[in-house]
Length: 300
Image (tube, rainbow, N blue to C red; front, side, top):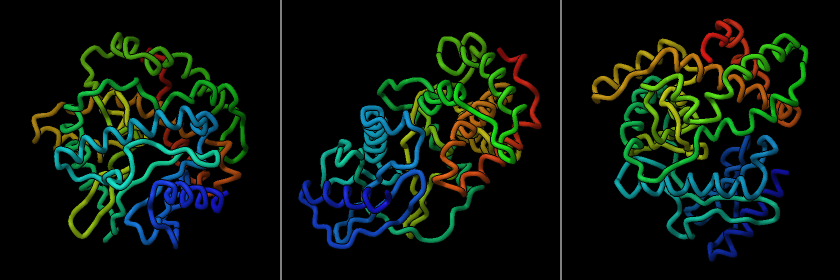
């Protein structure tokens, strides 16, 4: 499957006028990320994702939002991995894959997650000015169907986990699927354009500084979604950075809901484990944290 995605990316790039003689995989997990050598261009080809995200129409809408947000950030000089200027600013479909093309950057050094949490607050300050309206909490769109099909997997998800997830989703569904439903419970929450996928992790250190990356899940939502699962210590780091910027701090009741929602998002990825065995460790970690939290019944 990986080789098929590489071939599709190389063929699509050549059709766009790029020279590709030595496509080299930089990353292979949820997406295949391919440096299209010798061109200074990287293709990102989603591959190991829940089925609803692999629908070509859904994928193209998701990718166009990412390209638009990244291009907007670049236009204002913000440190972000930029879409490639050598191809049109739109996703490309080839051989059953939908892909995007980005400027190649040379990673230098390791990610400092503490510093990146501070940068998450900085990113929110910038994204608050994004002019386009985005849909509500798109990373959770696959949760209803995913939970409906969720089954116990001994050693990973027990039956009591599945039962609790269904019960909590029943309570939280009105909040998580509708901005109006969310604001009815949390009228003072800070809702804006957010990164959508843990921006403290999705950064690339380079010799010229750290770049934000991977805006595939960019969405409208509460700022707490971008800190879901990070825990109170990093939450304090975020709050200190936000306060220094004159920005709202994290609301702990909202954070509890977002932490639970993140656990839902991770749990419904369980069917991907046979293709990505390493994913099991992440699921165990999130589910383990979720098991220790109070039931969300009082938040609906």
